[in-house]
Image (cartoon, rainbow, N blue to C red; front, side):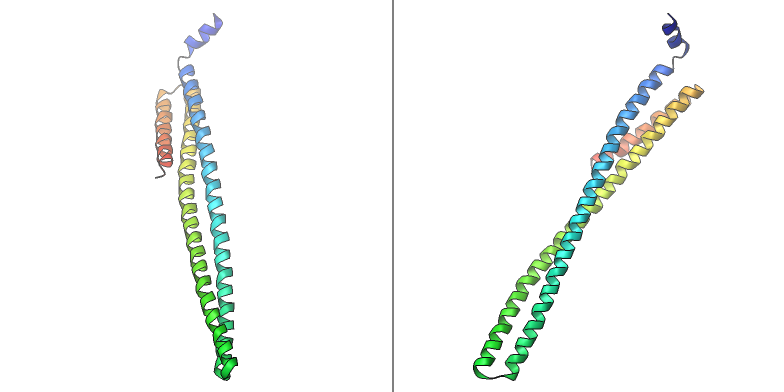
Length: 176
């Protein structure tokens, strides 16, 4: 009977407690998604850096082949006969190798750019989840204040803030 009396004495406590539990559950989901999207963004950022480094290596290799091509062309210019033909053949080979290297370097640069764009999109999404998480935490705080002050308007404010949080979570889920 004393337990029943406590419930009837504070009709606001039970609904606010349930609301707070729901908010906490939503917050846990938002927190998980914020962490997951941040990790994905970091993975893509790392991928972009790796591809950029590989592209740089290819461009350095390209530059080395250019130097060798220039030396072979110089050798072809300064010699005659069989030696000139050998140097010209080397210069042509380096030119062809450079073309292949350039294709690879540009492909790696494009992969880096794509990974960078994916990282930025994931970070944008991460911020949406984090904003939603922040708002749901504010909603929980407002719910606690509602219990302490017995102010129903504060409870409606908690619901409003939680609604905004869920809207942000929906945007994050839709990746907007």
